[in-house]
Structures are given as C-alpha cells and as structure tokens.
Length: 80
Image (tube, rainbow, N blue to C red; front, side, top):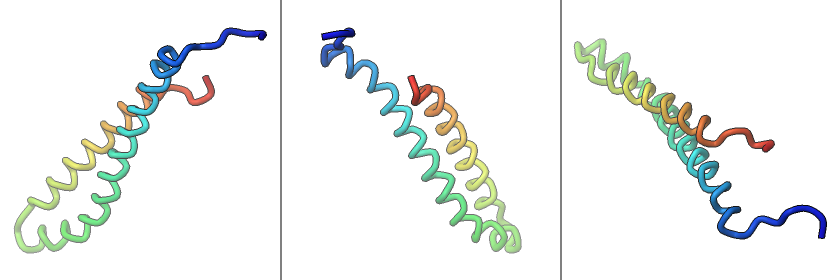
C-alpha cells in the first residue's frame, strides 16, 4: 500500500482541535444571533433611562466575537 496510514490515536489528535474550534465558533455565532434579538430592548431601555440592555448587548457581542476569533485560530485551515 502506498503512503503512510495514520493510526486512530494520531488521527484523533488531528481532528480534536478542529472540532473544538468549530464548537467555539458555533457558540460565538449563537451569542451574536441572540444579540440581534436583544437589540429590540436596547432602544426601549435607553428611552426609559436604563442602559443595562445596551451594556448587555455590547458585552455579549464582544464575547461572541472573541469566541469566533479563538475558534477560527483553533480550527486552522480546513484544506490541510
């Protein structure tokens, strides 16, 4: 048989960081989508004098973007 066959342990070592990275990216995207839903409360909160929803959406958006960035780096190139 030509080529080198990887055993199961080596193959799982290659796949695991990619799977973890994709999981982080999924959680980050979910946070951003929930942020879009919460934007409906930002205007009403600011109009009533509260800035809680504004800071909540900003904080959740930053965390979502950070998770997407970390996941993107962990996942690496899908063509390797």
